[in-house]
Length: 157
Length: 290
Image (tube, rainbow over all chains, first blue to last red):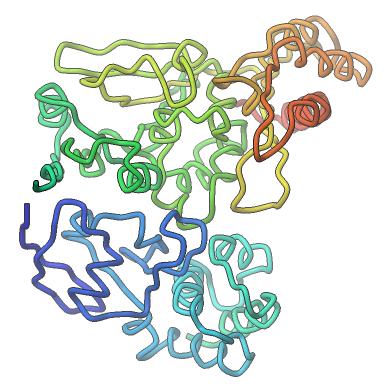
């Protein structure tokens, strides 16, 4: 049964048509035209679909979009446009933390959620690993990613 | 022929409306969704059932400590909130919560969901058993309390009836401390090959009560009474702990599967038990009461 809802993404309201079990991931990609979040595993193992809802990193493949009504979703398209998100994206480029790029939007969203809950420079390597454990990268071997996150964490906000 | 309709999505904001919806027809309770969304997509859960999202019922969330030391955890409390809670010191339940999945799944997944999914390998369940927690089930006709050790009836199966909702986990006050440890092949994003929770009540340096519980060692999470009984009355010296830890094998009936063989699991279990008892003891000595 198709219904209509308002989905708030990156500060803009999208009026979209949804089924009761439309995934947040599919709504972002096919209704809102925001394709940064990717379908990897569809089971919450790989983190390629990571976005934030009310600032918390979540797997958009494990949520129905109707759960987001009244909440605020952020994706890479929004967070990297300015502020600390732009710094994170720049540090990922500088550190060669991006190879094929499939995992990058999810990892950047997990990073932004981490930086939002820690003071500048305060995130330890343990915090970073805990925040990113749910994001798989098959290219980089993770070390450039850790570098990028450390640098972004230390940047002024 | 057209496919049958997918069930409707509902998000009541109060418990009585929620329980009425559960009473009306078979319904899928949606808490964090980290299991349910996948199970519906895979056909393990009937997609024609309505989805009732419980996250807007604020009574179902949060962690509170009564003056008498009783801890109450709302069933829709996220695993992350539990893992990071300042309300209680680290214990077997919070240890388990901090090990489930990754940050994203802990942010959404709930303690109630972990319990009602009833995976034999679930990380919070040994802690629930070891803490002697009571699980509160509510329906339109009333509430009942089920002890953790009597809640699970098989893999994915519990005593919860379709019109009942798990509302609260009630953990009695403790004279001691607890811990949960698991064995996995990697540190994160893995499922327990086996896991052990230990809870020790200590008075004047002597163990006065103990509970040991196992995950991925039987068809449900189980208590290991022989191991626990062997600890009681001892001063929790190393030989006593070592001897008691061996006795978890009296309870463990693990299977061979993709995550480990029965023989491997039986080799690892006593070692984990010894370590979990050791961490619980260390915490008790540091003054944790949980």
